[in-house]
Length: 300
Ligand code: CP
Ligand code: NVA
Image (cartoon, rainbow, N blue to C red; front, side, top):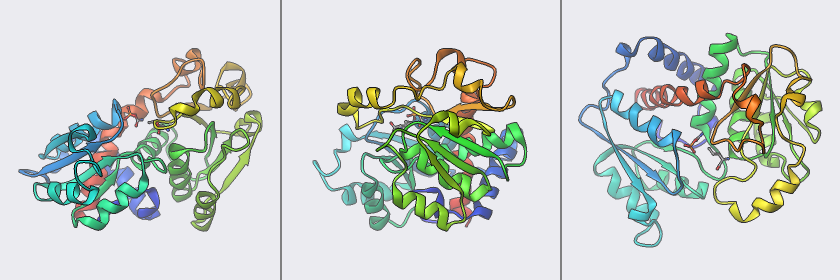
């Protein structure tokens, strides 16, 4: 597999295998193959990261490879030289390129420029490595995923889109509650439905969480949208995952957040740190998700 830019670069059976393998590695790290022994992996970031950089770097190390962390300040894509020239250069030393970009098209340009695998570590449109970790988290907590219901309350952004695809491939109903103008893009909804996924969109968070097994949220203002922050704070008023909202969901509901969290905005301190929160498990599973994905990309 040469590209993993969104969950639908996989198919349901492949995604299931990635999840199973990730869980197996977590239970028995001695089974992690040294398939990148003696090889480099370029990890290129146009935006900051706590989880993605550290988890992918450690995943590469456990696969026997050498991660090369590169900030765009250094390579200056499309300023010092083109995206294509940077990608081709890195392909001369590395077995894969994983990148966090502002524009999704930057990843597509990398795919077109090189023959080694290219992995999306978050773009404006998608965050598929996060979605794999989210599914592993749900599997670990609930067991079977089929028939579960995930209610995403917040912005119909990159994290929401990848989660919607991930749910479609695992038989989870995806429900989103967002203010008007912040829904999932129409093309994402169409693609998810064409894959057999169930997507329902509400404006009232209380409608979304009523029958939910998991409530999910993310920041209201994503990286690159900072100039919209004040407008978004107003638009998303009432979309906080707090005790009152969670109290209307089924008793067994869990709460998820990809992090970083803005306590008091999209999620209250007490819910984030409370007994229903799985956020630290999600963060930890990022490494398992990434190394299982890399194995899949090299073995298929
Ligand atoms: N969830 C996530 O991708 O976190 P970082 O932005 O810190 O990598
Ligand atoms: N939607 C957020 C996710 C951060 C992990 C962003 O793109 O900034």
